[in-house]
Length: 396
Image (tube, rainbow, N blue to C red):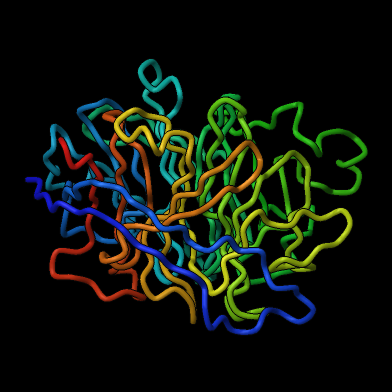
């Protein structure tokens, strides 16, 4: 059952009282949140679930989402099925790890492939725990998911900085964001998949045009799955309509190297995004600096371009959900980033009264769906949390 609350939003926010930047870091050129005016209703789609991390649709009538403890759920014709569609075995869940990414194959109608990323652990006969983060392909038969193939495993698999957003790009390739497991050296270690964005074919094999493919790189031990590196903990990726450019949100130092420093990046083939050598607005030759540095921290957890017609003013804008960072943003919400090509024009914030916002997605109906993350151990859950909600025009 859906409930609706009418909201007319007019807000203005500017950064003030920021904590000191990291040593030697110039003050970031953060565009303050612009006054925003948007008329919409917030409708509850699902309530009483636990840390819904990703949302996808297999058809206009069927939404699937995952809960971080390891459950894949489905909503059919607006009703949440009481039993999970699938429960991941040997899940490692807690802190920042668990069942994270979920996406469907671009040709799902023909092959029924669903992809999950999750923390995995199993004990050997001697009691030694083996842990990794893995991306696995499944076949959806409508009543359950049938395990098919593990595409890639990532080590180390720390309980924090685990990534792990997955999404198909306009090139038909599967992109995977990985965190550096709170071990910063891995972000620039090309023999490790941690702290990277990976690019794979739909069966886990490596595309020939990846940047580190070839005998020269193989001799050095470079992992050919790597698309970009120098990332701390990226969790939001999507491609700009019309240009195909890949944009990304990433959790910054948040106290590890100065407060704040969360990032919005343009990600390009083979480039180094600096962590841990540079952060905040620092610059260094051969490394990429962010388009936006959020300071204080905001903990950007997702990202999607809006490319529908239900909200014409949002078309072509990037939307990201903010959890609210360590010592930072007290009223997180959904942030709208307006771009002109590669350049940020302004940013606006709305839906700031529901706590921590994790996933933001655009449904086949053109409405903006988002999930709360107030039961992840760091929020203040309302009695009906966690929830999946959607924004619809106030005139609907």
